[in-house]
Image (cartoon, rainbow, N blue to C red; front, side, top):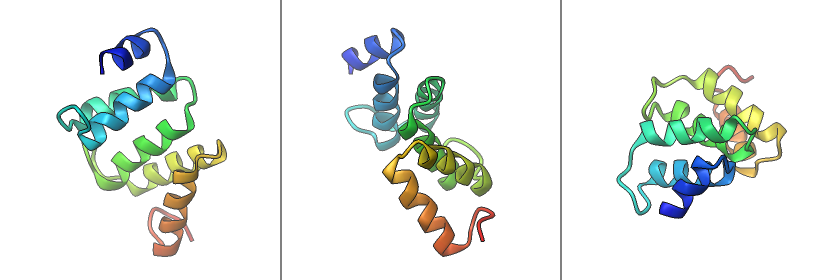
Length: 103
């Protein structure tokens, strides 16, 4: 955890994403969606594809943010445009369910 923190503080987007994921899932840290959001946003500053997806998951579920399926879809689309496989899956699920403003 300390190494991820140091790397994220130095601007490493992969470390920032990993910290966000750790806080999202509660892996080796207390689960905290607010902290996860901050780390995903930091990684998004450097256009980290998985971070768009992670932030989309928070918006989709209303974890640490008000639930907003449209924002979730837009974030999944951004991640999918950058070839994030999880975002492709999440978009397909939204399309199949017809939620978030997708046809």
